[in-house]
Image 1 (cartoon, rainbow, N blue to C red):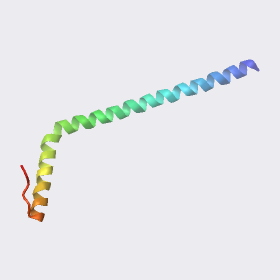
Image 2 (image 1 turned 180 degrees about the vertical axis):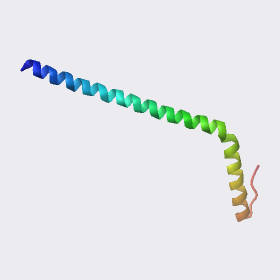
Image 3 (image 1 turned 60 degrees about the vertical axis):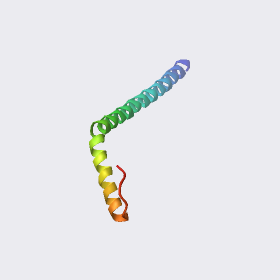
Image 4 (image 1 turned 180 degrees about the horizontal axis):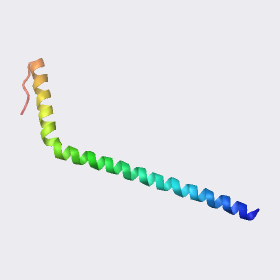
Length: 70
């Protein structure tokens, strides 16, 4: 009976260990996606975002009658 309880306890502890490793794997996955987003924003952000905001400013300025500050 004591051996059975030890086996159950060992199985329970092994299950807890796997949950921790899953959390680490998800954390690494999220960190990788965040790093990819940062690289894309720095690589394309200057040109794309500048043109996007400039076009938006021109459109809003034309519709409201105000000029954009540049």
